[in-house]
Image 1 (cartoon, rainbow, N blue to C red):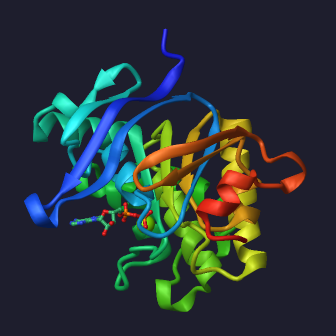
Image 2: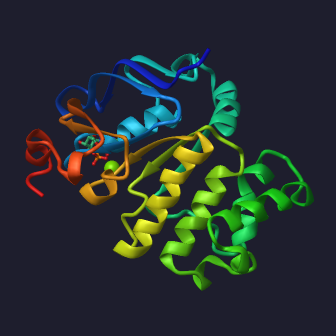
Length: 246
Ligand SMILES: Nc1ncnc2c1ncn2[C@@H]1O[C@H](COP(=O)(O)OP(=O)(O)O)[C@@H](O)[C@H]1O
Ligand SMILES: [Mg+2]
């Protein structure tokens, strides 16, 4: 039985060589239970994106193991990993990465189109997802005809089209005003609480982290703090120090 979505064992990522060596992650071990919402915080350069990329299988660790849903992805070959990622992982980034020439509906369908499925087979589900993110009326709009918050919601719908149990988000509210950011966070929380998804979200923003069940803080590639839900929206002193004061 799978109880953990993510298991990292002594994961190290080194970029560059000798003099230029950067230890972006330093022997990080971490277990993320399925159906939980985790926020990763830390100053710029502390290794947050690297951690997310390794979990997504977009980069390989220099040492250590990355296990998703009991499968060791750090040992998979490219083809197996690509197939595994398509079924298990949805990615949401700060820049929404929507294709400008495609409608919102087509953008949501894109991962499945790339996977060789036909538009008419995917369309009903894509429409359901647009309805879930409150964009039923906007399916025909191109990204430049949508607000930032609407574009991010399209990106979230797109991350959900393959029913991925694990969603990885890098600063998903970074480009949004606080009100639209809040609507995106509420949606992410619903996905965890009502749809049993697992979410790991990188954020600089303590208000965003307050939506998570757990807040992990990175500093110089190491986990320096690992807390349950932020009690009363307060960060620990160690986290505040790592963020350079907030
Ligand atoms: N592709 C790369 N090549 C070389 N160094 C990198 C690369 N990606 C990240 N780094 C370095 O690794 C460290 C961690 O980066 P990153 O994971 O992007 O941090 P964060 O997302 O917390 O800002 C930084 O020192 C960064 O400069
Ligand atoms: Mg980053």
